[in-house]
Length: 273
Image (cartoon, rainbow, N blue to C red; front, side, top):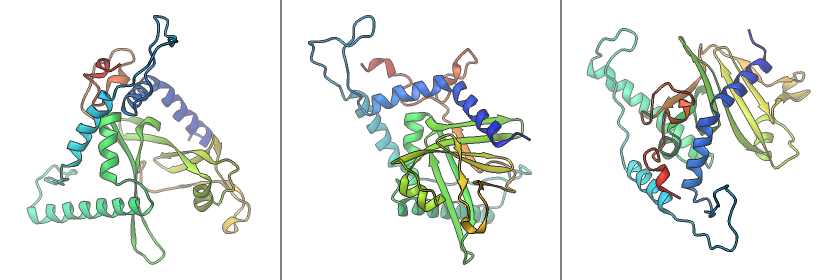
């Protein structure tokens, strides 16, 4: 069984492998956010004594597509039992569909109560601008026995997963946490304004690092000694979702990762300055 540091290194190695994909995502993000245009010479150096004008064609193109998809309604459909492959009766599928919708709505409300964008809007933008979708889905119980649906959509630019014949072996994502958030969630007195938290899930446990150092539970907190934050679980797989949009090139040439699961700029990227 790999140690926590070995798991972290696996995630870092996977991120290196996906370097070409991340570079493409960064280039698309610059188009989306209208990164200042600079006229350059043949060597790539910005020219002086010129007036640079940043066009909004790429951003407008993206917003029109995202706005159009935002108007669509979600429709959950369950048709068959995934374990047996047999078709299920309508009364049973309706209950399952309603249950899924209720959980998605509860998770969405929980996000908005935390001051975060709604689930559907985030998923829509990730599909359009990243070409890959990711998220964490946890179902827990509070002290009163009430079910809590904890859905966290992730920016796949900062997510890396490895798969084998059994499914997802591990999934890792990085997210910036404010000083106040680190204090309220982990009881950590962080010195900076914000830190980079890495969360990694395997089939057996969860692990956390802050600025690439193991997140340590404080001495005396909850009556326990200092130890890395994380815990074993019995889910049997990482509670993560990672899905690739069916757009792009699925050829197996070198560095093909960057074009698997493309963004909306796939066929128009080179048209924009």
